[in-house]
Length: 313
Image (cartoon, rainbow, N blue to C red; front, side):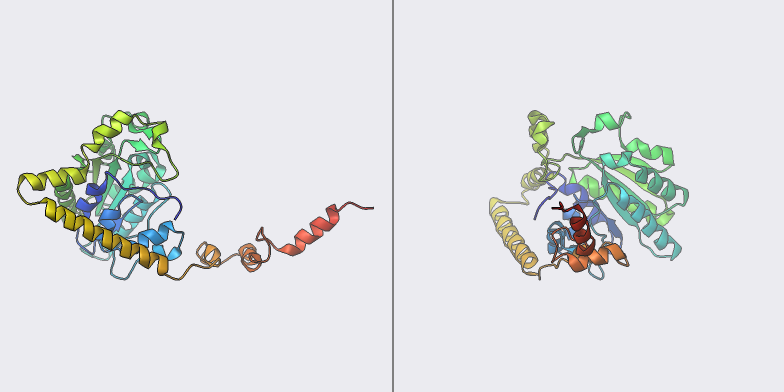
């Protein structure tokens, strides 16, 4: 596996949302919603396969109302609006809940999706995970408004800011938004204030642009730690239960990694087969010559070019 975006510190936002949704609601994510995806029914190995570069990681099982991870920033919001429109058109009691970062609200796709959903009264819940950083750009530089949530006002949709590290608060606001979407066919914009404890991806080094004291402050607000303290105070959790849970989690993860690694290896054809619905002629040539030429090009014109440029005696 190469590049991978960590989810540390943001688990509560997507998990709380998934818990509040129906199993046949659309769960439309970017790449920091693993906890919610797993709760909503996506097999864990699919996420690993995706980041291993295997197209099978994007094959969502029948009956799982999730979409493949969206890597281009903001595109999934348009998909959610379209899915919600289809549900409304077909008279289905189904909504779409989509996730994106604070940086995505500066994309044109956000405006298009929000404007479309608001004008057509679509059952969409927009969840912005404001983790303070769009890679290395802090929120205060890209948004002059006091909150990201109020961007929803311009579209005439209800908006709310919530503590994204509070699991129970997330369940509450998503339930309210889901009722509005289902009963009134109206979208809602939710800003979940959270923090990206890890680097943007494994290809990033956040120490170059983030203050260490800021990270340490947010570590104390980690949603997993907060949930553990909540349970401890109410005598609902013990060290023994914690140890058992950790052991079980390690076994589950080991089994998932093994399943992902044991699935038949993808072939070089996959590079071409999942790019276009119909492979264009130039890619057919590249596919057929990939194993015989390092550039993956048709060797015939290359030989002609080499012959023409060869020095004469």
